[in-house]
Image 1 (tube, rainbow, N blue to C red):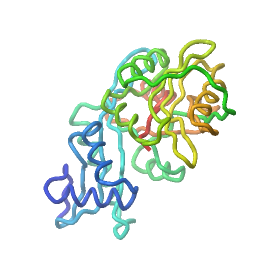
Image 2: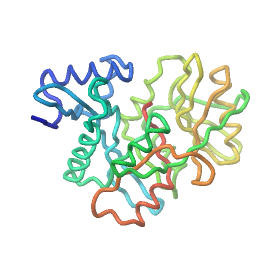
Image 3: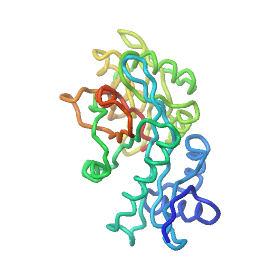
Image 4: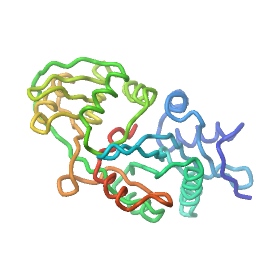
Length: 277
């Protein structure tokens, strides 16, 4: 018998083991994610009591360019046991997640495919690509930067994204992002740039630092990326917003019943931002 529900009892341990096997994140990382981002825990699909597939479904806000606010479920850590792949378990789980989201009054599901080829998989479950991104790189060029707490980052982020469709993260979700990378320069930052302040979510990985989002005046992008490179002491990849003709699709959305097409078009041209990847 197939069952789909939030993990209970030993199912949570099996889901944690599957997450670690597929993505490499240990149980402590997963507990922190659920605590700060998705307190309901994982959604699991079992067959005759055996785990087949899982995902997490934290809720995000999605604000349109005109200020209208939508509710979205973010599909994260979707995984199927390696010996059970190719049987449609993940697609079945996504369909149930859409039904649960609809029942909770959400407007859409969002996701960030881990690899470009997965956009095709998600398209088969009704997801449309969008939320375009480009990567900026620049040589180190110091500029004033300071670490700021999640609440201050959220307020600055909102001011920089005003008038553009974008996702909104809770303080807990931003706190999770702040702690994703344990290396010293990692964190949430305010930048002082020639045309005004900017913000950056920095992960200072030894092999290659990543700026999960760099938000600033467009003409300050190179200097903002250079400031993050100077902070880390080596080149960085900085994700910045782009239009459909300027960058690559970063995320995808599945719209739930009743969402007008006009809203869909506005949202997909927006900024998804943090993916917790």
